[in-house]
Image 1 (spheres, rainbow, N blue to C red):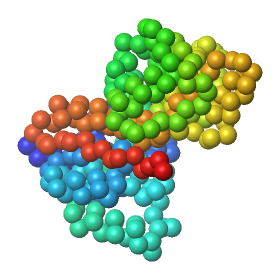
Image 2 (image 1 turned 135 degrees about the vertical axis):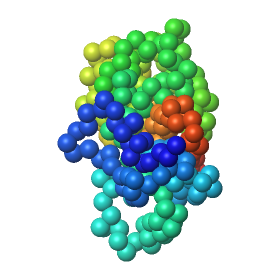
Image 3 (image 1 turned 120 degrees about the vertical axis):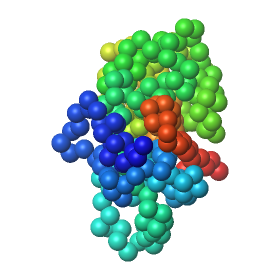
Image 4 (image 1 turned 180 degrees about the vertical axis):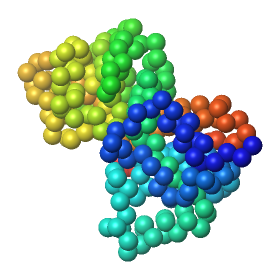
Length: 265
């Protein structure tokens, strides 16, 4: 059976209504190209592209753009040597890259959040699924420090960032992926859902973290754990890889992860 890139895209977008200004698109390659294998990744880095070539895969489905901006514009990169080398590698290997950002966030439930919750082993703790967050109730109160260690162990990452008292015992938390950690999203959740803890990917550092700092200085028991954008969303792409592997059994489908982009010195 010859499966094309278009076949994969139609499967991903089935019953999904995308916004008019969606960033999801075929960024390189062609829709009528026959698929030899699929690599899924959070970000189609140079390493991920090399792994696709190694596995004989000519389709990469990535959550973020390969070209360092949300809308995948390349005019401003035309003479940049990093862009040119990456584009040359993609083109010479005949790789199609499809952006799966808005699609997976519109799964029911949100596919990226679901992947993170599953990776953390918290599926049974979900009390409520909202468009931008899962509200969880931990069966036994755990300290922020213990939760942070659990997150690091489950996701295989070296560090997270914590604001607030690490010894605070938490019962209720919200889990938000990607760039949903900003104050206009997190602060209403903290109050409306009576949360002890926010666990988020990233956000402006002068919004939620500063709110948490003021709350603690006022004697209120609140805390924040920031995972990192990629660290919060990669598990969702891995879950999608598992599902595509079951759907397209005749194709080789793999998730390729990356080490965190930042190191602690």
